[in-house]
Amino acid sequence: MEKVIVIDFGGQYNQLVARRVRECNVYCEIYSYKTDLNQIKSMNPKGIILTGGPNSCYEADSPACTKELFELGIPVLGLCYGAQLMMFVLGGRVERALVQEFGKTELNVNTSSPLFENVSPTTICWMSHTDYISEAAPGFSVTAHTADCPVAAAEDLSRRLFALQFHPEVLHTEEGTKMLYNFVRGVCGCVGTWRMDSFVDTSIQEIRKKVGGGKVLCALSGGVDSSVAAVMLAKAVGSQLTCVFVDHGLLRKDEGDEVEEVFGPNGLYDLNFIRVNAQERFYDRLSGVTEPERKRKIIGEEFIRVFEEEAKKIGAVDFLVQGTIYPDVVESGLGGESAVIKSHHNVGGLPDCVDFKEIIEPLRDLFKDEVRQAGLELGISEKLVYRQPFPGPGLGIRIIGEVTAEKVRIVQDADAVYREEIAKAGLDKSIGQYFAALTNMRSVGVMGDERTYDYAVALRAVNTVDFMTAESAEIPFAVLQTVMSRIINEVRGVNRVFYDLTSKPPGTIEFE
Ligand code: XMP
Image: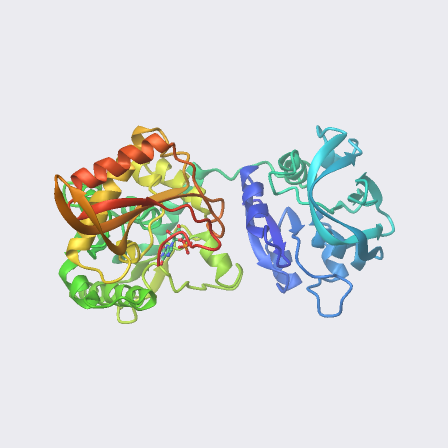
């Protein structure tokens, strides 16, 4: 399969670069700058992209690359730090800039460059640098500049080397996608064969071949990743697959039943489905516990324990399925290093005692939105595929303080009302993540001439690009009012509703 390799120098947008390349239907993987040159060669990439990074390339222990990287005959595109490094290694000059550029900047480009084909002569790019290229390396011609940056782009067509001081991968660079397209499809000559339907078909065939007649075990959480992984396995090996679904009693309202509807005996797939109703066990273990980290730990540990008990009943299996996705792989130590298994913060680690020979991670190469696409390809309902992100510890971390069955009921009911009204208002697709949480606060109120002393529910809604930062979402006041009055009228035990305006930072998205 044709592929482009992104070499990561520690830039904050490295995953974005890979995403954009895949949007051009070209498969792309990220590797550390420490990756051996021979390994890169053996992957036979059609192109190489060097990412940005926080260092100065002229300093001694900064991440570097050798001259040989540029002599492989493979087209190379350097971005920001990658551009500076390319110039520096090949004999150009990089210096601390007197005027640092940050943000949207007007860029003048030479449109006869293959990288700037169909790009406007004056366009907007996203700059973020303190060093600058004061002199392009020998053999390079300058193909773009800004008011403060004499070498905003340079190229050596004979060696097919390109340098961009700015970030084409962020959407603020208005024609950046075009530039990346020109590089991978034009300069590198990629045909664009990366398609989700072919990925799904090929994966199913590969899984079938790998598993043979073996037995496969999968922990199903009902979330998008594990559901897509399970369906892929079900399509590949059918009844050789057993899915264990641990209902920890901290799911959203009716979610356990919804999972059972899809995967259970009356569901859509031919697999062995085991639902473990472990609610009481979890509530028992959580009784009296108020410290957030402790709660998270207990839920994670108990989950593993329940899963292991079920796995023991099944006996030895050949394969264990994990819903690891590409960002997990990258975050846990960069691609290329073999089989890094994330201690998934969903379930707090892999079960030690499950007797299996090998792990299958069918989504290991996919970004989240690609997982969703694969899910749709596999015929999973939109409702499930576009499910909101839901933390592994579930409602356990949306109930401040001690978790009890009663509090779970309150937060489930309040959350269901909230979700219903958000959908009714047509906001469900536009808000990043929203949910109700139960504060540990009780206050005095009055209802029907009677004094009440009940809980306060907090509503949260945020917009976020990467979940690292988030802004509280603007919800029309009338919608909030409807949600408030419905929760107070319909959910016993609540007499006050708050809307959380806090962004992240300083708040986190979840409450604990
Ligand atoms: P925070 O609260 O850290 O949340 O701002 C960021 C995103 O991560 C989700 N989240 C989790 N997801 N296991 C998960 O799978 C967890 O333990 C966990 N904690 C937070 C949260 O819902 C939000 O989308």
